[in-house]
Image 1 (cartoon, one colour):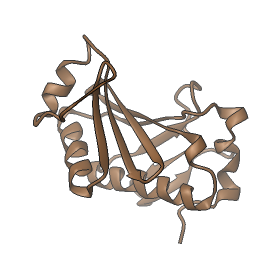
Image 2 (cartoon, helix red, strand yellow):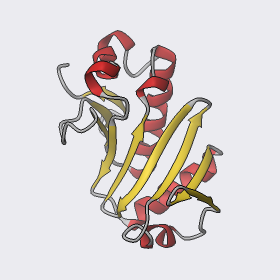
Image 3 (cartoon, helix red, strand yellow):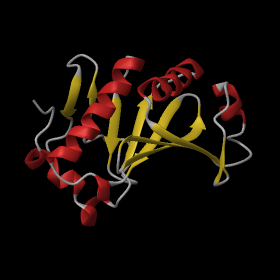
Length: 158
């Protein structure tokens, strides 16, 4: 069974209302959480690309090496949890894991289910909430992985 139904969240995936790249974040993280995230990506076998200032590089063995570059250059980790679905992790700070997903890739129940499985997998591994807010609209999440419920839930009345 799906965590969320497309008809209940479709408004938050409307490209005209919400832009194309909603902000997803895991608050109150540590370097250890980043390490767990990278280990998760590797263990799940998800396709990935590590980029420094837009150029592809081999993924460093130590997360600290990735985080140490963030003040000097743009560092991102592109992850494809399923074909055609990209999550762009931006290494801004150790204290919060930030990433974007592309709403153009997430239209319909099947793709929503992919997103829910992805957020749940991250949330379970980190034992933390994973929250999605519309692009550029601050810190008011519309949906996210709820640790207590152990699933993705609608956070706003929408």
